[in-house]
Amino acid sequence: MVELLYLNDSYLKEFEAEVLEASDNWIVLDRTAFYPGGGGQPSDTGIIKFGGKEVKVVEMKRENVAHVIDGELPEIGEKIKGIIDWDRRYKIMRTHTAVHVISGVAFQNFGVKITGNQLYSGRARVDLSFENLTREIVSEIIEGSNEVIKKDLKVKAYYLTKEEFMNAPELMRVNPKLYEKYDKIRVVEIENFDAQADGGTHVRSLKEIGKIVLEKYESKGKRNKRIYVRVENE
Ligand SMILES: [Zn+2]
Image (cartoon, rainbow, N blue to C red):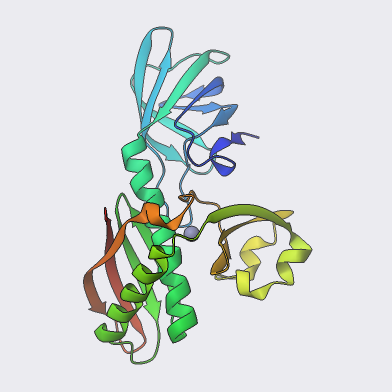
């Protein structure tokens, strides 16, 4: 099992680790701060240093938490230093937390559900489902989200047992069956505002998001709408 360092510290930019597997163009480490992708959050990029060399991590393979390398691979057992592309990742974190704020406002104020999302560095695509969802309502959701950000609420992550989790239906935003294989479930909570099961990386407090801007609104039929948002510095 690879120790996933980002779960306890999403601000960790550098780490030391040992190579467990090396094959083709990828390596598996005993521990990593690189996010492997999933839940709409893209995998991290960065560099790995070993024996005076430096190679690029171009993406992660989610299935086995492998670092896909452009260049020479270190050997099994070798000690390496990993450094994630922090500019890119921090923007992804701001965007991820922003989408949770949008999801909270959309649901609490308008009963609108988010059915999917894809995060990019500083930008996100969000799919919403609601009867007669208009561009005006979407604008109000974004406005409401920016009001919530101004409150600068704290964001924290913690674990619940499967039993605790199954007794808290409000935390399940996607198919509950997806959680059956886990003994404990990680919850990301924006204090006193929104909590949901989540394995991604988030900022510590809402002010770090900056400001959410609605870029584009698309109708995908009567119930389904797609929006694109970006985060900007305040
Ligand atoms: Zn999330």
